[in-house]
Image (tube, rainbow, N blue to C red; front, top):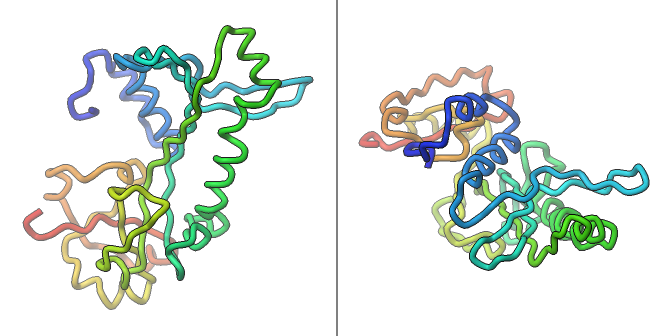
Length: 227
């Protein structure tokens, strides 16, 4: 869509896709995509709900579906998790901050974020605006990184879509041993985590990863010699 965008996508819109926190960048892409969508209309975006001077929470999107003629509450999330140990358990998938776990995110979505529009207080405020929520959906994108030893085993991960994006992770010592097996690599910026590399980017691949960079997590795209 961004390679062949709608003519309504202006230079100012593209300029707003500047480096930012990945979650905000992800949400901004969704807002641009939905802005002139033939089916979906954004009713409210990033709306904070308050009662008696207390903030109850914030909803990502309230969306009107022109086909069903109903309004839905959507929560957006983009996450990257590394699997350790028992990969069938959500509790064994960790984010860049080790306390960020898939099971905790799942429970937060299920028990907090998606329930906000089901509370009596918020439903009363919605009713005052003539809004009735018919469904709540979570749009969770990202990538699951398996241990290098498990990456080629075609494991079934029951809590993820069958076509969910996957990668693999290596420790510093494993990378030093195996780096020669991956002669075509490109280091990724945060904004490049969300899409495949273009042909031009693949042609510009490089492998200069100094040891000093291995003191913190880095993300690489690995390509075959023929692209």
